[in-house]
Image (cartoon, rainbow, N blue to C red; front, side, top):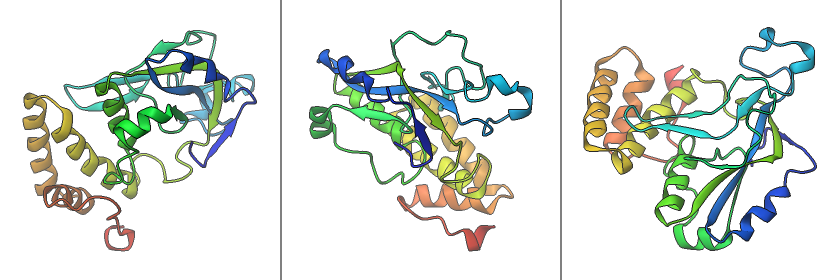
Amino acid sequence: MNNDTLVDRQVLSFASVFDDSSVGACGSKIYFAAGHEFHHDRYKESERGRVFWYAGGIVDWNNLYASHRGVDEVDHGQYDKSIETPFITGCSLVVRREVVERVGMLDDKYFLYLEDLDWNIRIQKAGYKTIYFPKSIVWHVNAGSSGRPGNPMHEYYFTRNRLFLGMRYASLRTKFALIREGFRFFIGKSAIRRKAVLDWLFGRLGFQYEPKKYN
């Protein structure tokens, strides 16, 4: 669980989900913490604290992007059904012990961003389900631990790790598209993205970002 979260007293209520031996991992319904929404001015005071940050995962394998179902929507009960989901965000994720013993832990080659998607993929490839369980509720202070999307740290790790993840799991067509995109980043104006591409190319993974050089 992330260090920038608040939890409901029912956060561990998904223990019963693991009665099904095919379930390998389970994740919570996650709201933005009140006042920390991406677009907080669009919501009424009564709606804050009930705006979704995550209500299940969506993976676009053609473009290699993962997104959160329901993000920015106010909760009116539309995502109150427990379902199998392509990925559970690492913000609030519980994994069966035998699954960890079988597939291992989060891959520290990522260090930050997409490591949870990689873990979900490995869990599913091992034959287990990943489940969204909305009775377990968490509030997330968005990007409180690493800065908001678009900041230099996010830009570096997301660019590098997306290339790394894609070369592991994507289709051949998507891999070629990622290589073309990486080349555009390499010849582009962003020094951070250029470093990200070079570090991926030469296998410099894990913690690599040095903000003093690239801000």
